[in-house]
Length: 116
Length: 170
Image (tube, rainbow over all chains, first blue to last red; front, side, top):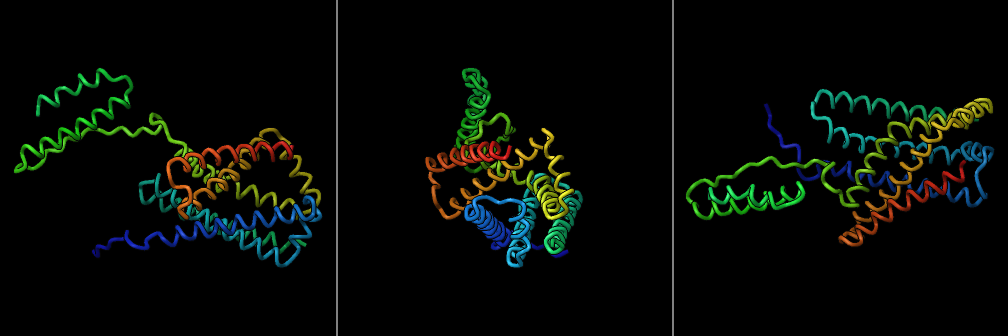
């Protein structure tokens, strides 16, 4: 059996960075909608639907979705790693999390592009 | 050395709280281990092991710790409830007016409103605490005083914003 040390420099750095970059993207997206609301003096249903019919905002919203799901993955994985010790149970829960998150991503894409 | 360790219960008896007693016991353990090592350097140091109680309920958490654990709890809530609720809401908002009316009647229920209020707070706390953590990463406000003040600010701002937005929505 090959013994490898799986902790060390850079291990987990990518996740740490992803968590922060996606957080900044989500803050910017929140500010974007705040700016839209301020510019139009509020958001009603018609404006909301018109904005999401806009191709650019659709793509931006999908990017937001990817950020949310990736961010959620890093955070939930941290939580599962901290509290679930049996490897089999943890792996099962982690796989379920990934499956659910990818499902949410598909759902979001479908919602955005099926809207008239 | 034996005499020193025998004094532990006597010291403990003078002390009021359990945490206080535990802290003293740890000081005395430390001293005991030090003396054993100094007086018998040829022997292998005998390290006394005592159970360490780290009961999170018993320990009074400092404010930054409270912000941190609430960040985790709110994050978990946003994943478990927040994301699906947002997707359902988006679906209703883009579908027919009937679906939207149905969704509106669903969230008119007081219990649903409570859940939405909880999600609103989760989002706002996660956002405010997240900004604080980003600033801490950039070494802004890492001293004890500013760190305490910013954790109070996060708790207050997220609660105030939740109340302000919650009142406006209902």
